Structure formats: structure tokens, C-alpha cells
Image 1: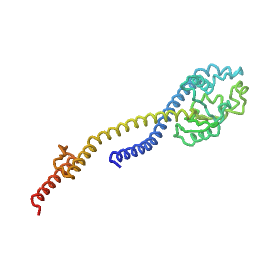
Image 2: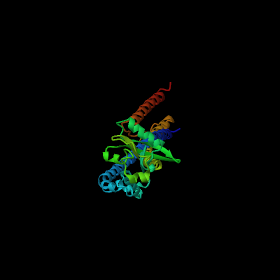
Image 3: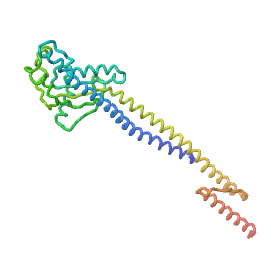
Length: 296
């Protein structure tokens, strides 16, 4: 096997090993980066949702709640959670957020549409147990589809929320007529009663991560291919061609052609080898001359 072939095989092995190792590491990094980007976007949307919630609670509810308390028709738009959900549904009409799903997953909601399932209930309980925990994220599967979720605790920090959720006796009559007196009561100030959670199809995250990974690996492959070509060119010109020249001259000398010359060599390892062959040729030439002059 020639030197060039050996060098290329070694470079290819290093390239394949490097691609496998870097590809695995890069895939994990890109997936984490994609998750962080989606989480950041989800948390931003939660802040927007909370702004809508506060506006509804501070500006809209005082105008509409007296009518509900007087026993007139219950106006769902005066409820912050309802308003937040409806605003988010409008936001989902934007293509950028079309795959996002928002839910105030509540352990004991007034509207059963917001009822937390078993998975979401565990998240709420975790927020209750770990007081310093401000957010959690991860993956879950619903109806065979992988979803990435980002969740934050929902704590009752405004006493006005308890007007509709403390006891049925204090709740507006129109609310009881609409939702009954069985659900959505018993809430207390500073209790974590729900989790704000946003779901995103995991395929989007994986697709973004894979796209970025393949792009970087493609660039690395091009760079490494250019390196292999450059190394081969340098190897042929700076090493192999000179070695072949030395071998050719040595072969000529071995058959008695003492006029063969190695020529001028660079002062490197191959040049040192040529100089050594030159000295050996001169020594051989002196020895042959001595033999020819003294046949006995």
C-alpha cells in the first residue's frame, strides 16, 4: 500500500469518526438550542397572556361584574382566564404561532374546559411542593403525537380573583346559573391552583435541530474535503515526488550510473535523506575506484 493511500485512509477514518462524534454532540446542542428558543417564545407568550389577564381583571371585570352579581346574564369575557384563552386563539391564526396550544390547566376550574389532566395535575403538584421552581419543560405524547411543553405556576396573588372562586355563596348568581356550584371554589390567596402551559409539536423542534445540524455538518464535510485535497496536493509535491526522485536516482546508482544526481534539496528531513544518499554514493564511488586501481 502506497504512502498516499495510507494517509488518505487515515484521514478518512478520522473524518468519519469526527463526523460521528461531532454529529452526535452537535445534534444534542442544536436540539437544546431549539428547545430553549421555543421555551423563550412560550414564556414571552405567557407574559402577554398575563398582561391580558391583568387588563381584563383590572379594567373589564369592574365594568361587567356588577351586572353578573345582580343576576343578569353571565358575561364570560369578564373572566381573565376566558379572555386570555380567546386572545390566544386569535394569536394562533398567525402562521408563526399556529402550532402553539395554550391552557390554564387548573385542578378545580369553574369551566371544565380548563380542567388539568393527570399529567398537568402532576406539574401543578410539583410547583406546590417546590416553592422556588418557576418553570418546567419537556416532552409528552398526546394521541400518538409528541409535544414539547413549557409550563409556569399560576398563583392567586390578587384577592379580586376570590370573588368568583372562594365559596358559592359569594359568587355571582349568573355564574352559578351558568357553571353550577360544584366546581371552581375553595381557592385561597397565594395558592397555586393551576399551571399555565403551552404545547408545541415536537416535530418542529426536531426539524429545526436536524436542519441546523445537517447544515453545520455539511459545512464541516466541505471543509474537511478541502483539507484532504490540499493535504494530498502538498503530500505529492512536497513528499512523494521528492521521494520518487530519490528512489529513481538511487536505482540508477545501484546499476553503476555514478553521474546520477539527487539535485539541490531543501533543508528538511527529505533533503537530509538525499544528502545521506549523496554521501553514500560518493563513498561507493571511492570504493569502486579503489577496487579498480588495486585489482589484487
